[in-house]
Figure 1 (tube, rainbow, N blue to C red):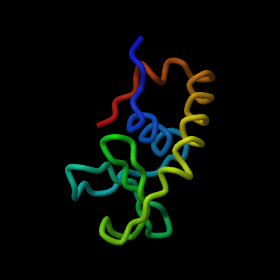
Figure 2: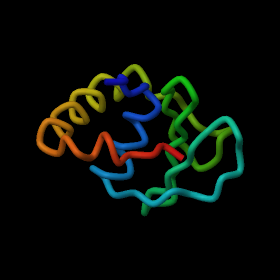
Figure 3: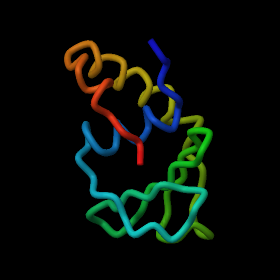
Length: 90
């Protein structure tokens, strides 16, 4: 079985667990998710997570959030094992 990348785990977290909509893709380097308050999450190719209104104004929250996200995704996948097989990151 192929292990999920950090980016795939982060995307699954924002799409499946938080149910955030994907934003308009304005960057090839980041997958974007829109929050209701106008802020955006930017997920990098290596799993880096940034938050801000724009990419230029965003700050990294990878160190704070990625370990929690990975743990929640692992618990989610234990309850929903078929999700991993059906999941497509892009």
